[in-house]
Image 1 (cartoon, helix red, strand yellow):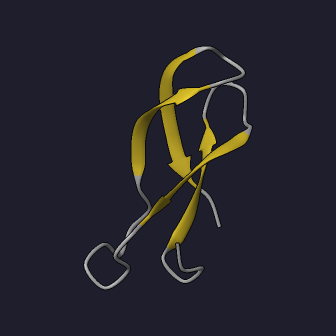
Image 2 (cartoon, rainbow, N blue to C red):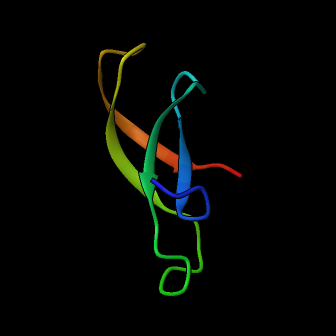
Length: 51
């Protein structure tokens, strides 16, 4: 994955950064919020995009 499209996701429950994904920055201006699996919480939780 190229570094300019790569975004980090932080778990809203435990505040750990563990998920990465691509984002089209031309189409999506705001920050993403996705429900992803957190390995430390061991459940699907809401993840928000970080800087």
